[in-house]
Image (tube, rainbow, N blue to C red):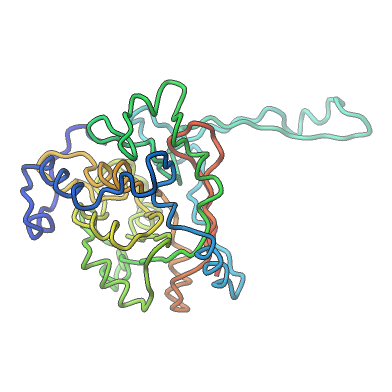
Length: 338
């Protein structure tokens, strides 16, 4: 991923009255409208997960009718999308003991076994961004000094372990790729790279699917980019051009009071970003100011096909991060059940 990206399609931010040459002004003005700092108290470590309460989990559990389950995880293996940016690599899986070692007679009465180890960055495949992942002008979630929150020992305040028992409940798939993308051809149901998904696009998809999105929901946005990579190869999936949410959706993310959002792309927001010179400006608002959990690199294909077939777009989702003390992100295997 480039460290000096050039701006992408600016139509959405121009329509919102924003200057594509002034991302700092746009970020500051948006923060003034949507910041959740102090909303759940000065000591809060959960952000928008406060909105996902017991009643919302009961509501989600009632959506299980058929028992059909879908893994929303991409594979964790050496053939993944990573290209080395910020020292991110694909997982390296190594066997410690194999079936051959079982012949050595280490254990009694013919018992054998295998063991293995994996080395990987925590954000190399399907993952959650924790609240300690992104800062704004030196501030982490809830106005804390970033240098005090995340040290060489990890995130000492909002480590991903604080969310270990929270990310399960009602979820909604917004299949924007099928709603707005081509209907025929090799790219059917897929948005082109650089497509900025606006609030109007999200609302149009919600209306077309006949579903609701609101307080405490976990939202999954399918663009179709992951489907394209499986057909054509990874290419620049990790950090390159991609469809994604427009910067202008920050108010929607705040006003709907969703608990978390995940996409099938590497970076959640549209790439290239919409300002002349910018780097992930929507992250700069969503994580440190909204306190919003963001999921990336989710495989939504099998679930989306099922939703398109039965026209049911809400479901139970369990998507707990690994309980890694002090981590600013976590791999996971989200499981959707209908």
